[in-house]
Image (cartoon, rainbow, N blue to C red):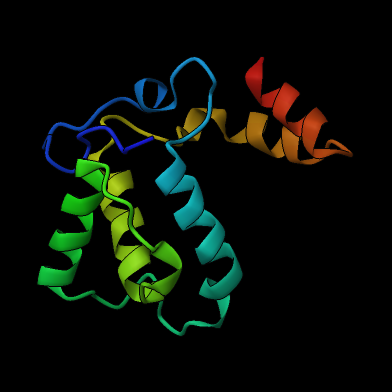
Length: 121
């Protein structure tokens, strides 16, 4: 599954439209998040440091085209830059301060499933 034209559309797409009916992020974004979860914590300044503009543009274009990209072979800084760009392209707020207490209450639930259910309400 390719990433919808998020990187080409300056206004972006709402998160709900990207997730579709299944409620999951596009496969490349999920894979990118998995890689960053594994390798990101050991990369100093992962979300502060800038990636090369040409490499970033090329990777985003490849993802938009639906090309088969070997994400695990990409530098963590570049993957973090793609994630930041992806999140910036989503219109509106991802996290609303008015829901802070709801998030904190959900995080107190004993299991991940219970936390997810709490947040869906």
